[in-house]
Image (cartoon, rainbow, N blue to C red; front, side, top):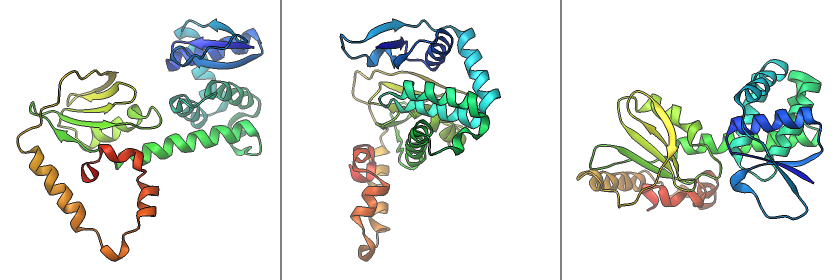
Length: 245
């Protein structure tokens, strides 16, 4: 079995797809370098990222299939789910064959898998827009920590840019050690390592207590439904919510 190994970037994945398409090798999977697992039955081929090849694949998906398919490919890449590289490759091959109509063919196993992955990632993105909680630090920066299942910090950042245009803030994906940083003008994704405890602004603790009191006061005792709450707000997210701390 052959596995293509890339550097973990989206351009690296697209370069690997370019190589798989033109080399016509029967590959088992396309895997990010930091996700490799030991298996003596697998022959690994390292693919160096080449922007020219990545751009060709990007444009080909956009022009020959659709912008919607390109979004599905990107969301699938961000899912970080097992074998998503192989699924993306097979999906693109189908897309080149059927064109923009490919997503209507849900009886096809690959199209169905892509649709399921897309729904998981877009669903978590939508859910996380309501679950990000900021706290103001001593230096005035607004900080939020999250641990999403999928790598969605870059998908939610534009929403908070539009909501907190004049503030400096960070949304920190603790699980991946990365974050979206906004300085009031532009936002970027970069690695984050926090060595010391974060110092909160003097009034922040009071604001958090007020938020907890508000959350408790609006609850209607006779309509509390723990099962529904856990379905809409899964418990794995709770440790980063002020009202659940």
